[in-house]
Image (cartoon, rainbow, N blue to C red; front, side, top):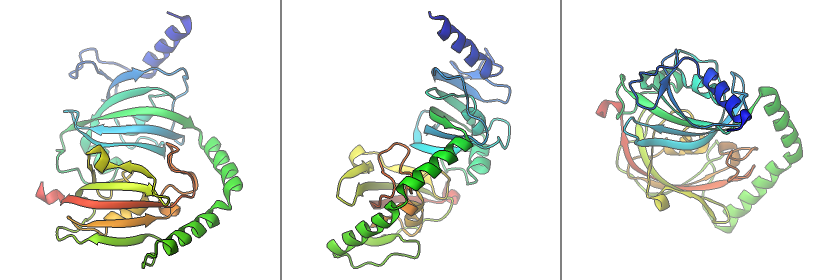
Length: 294
């Protein structure tokens, strides 16, 4: 084994704090703040995320039975942990290109970190698994410098997007006006079920495509509806948050989402959605369940 690899493994072991070799979760070690972890991939870099840094991560939230209830790529700013065992501590245990699964307390994660109600399928005393793949770490200074340089290069694209969107509406002869936010809403099938409210667990099917008709995502094709707690941070883009909040169970509607309600002037972190790009989402609400119905 190469000396460099041995050094990296030693550094990782030190960075992961104190470990409990008698873990109640086989294969997992425990930190002094009660986080259980299992390292999957070791990176070359030893620089880890700190409060204030901007990170790009693949996130997967699972029950202890490995049932996935959220999976996606997010770019976010790391916060100072609000309590011992917070997910921000997990971020701080990884460097770029590293991945690990963490077991954390569910109650604090939802009520403190996400500031939302527990999903109906999770009890306050439960723990959950969070798989994190650290794709990139940027200091706040580097992030803001990169953003400023990018915006100065692409500043004219915002006006160009508005022209393209207006031409699309005219070409498709859509008799619809934008809402005050800029979102376009076309009802395809009325729903007669419960209206979506903050804290509800919502199950949806959606298909997303560009104005040229090319698809970029579809839960229908994957045969895997998306379930999330409405109002929870990091779940859906701003435009879909507004859209779903206007819908009822059983409803199917089409939304045109301008970039300021979508992925903005940076595009998606996965690079699938370019900057200043309007999107079309066809959304169907399969079910809506309030916490009181759990």
